[in-house]
Length: 54
Image 1 (cartoon, rainbow, N blue to C red):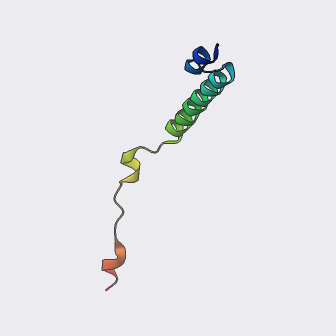
Image 2: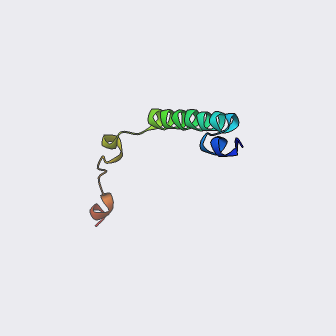
């Protein structure tokens, strides 16, 4: 008889798993942001010396 009401509400285990997934996602995003290389450093031009061999 309570089956209908329980189907709408996630179980305690599912709630804990969802919270753990969210925490893991935040940790990964924080780590990625800390390791991020700014665009200015990746688009720096490097002289092409192939044309000066002649």
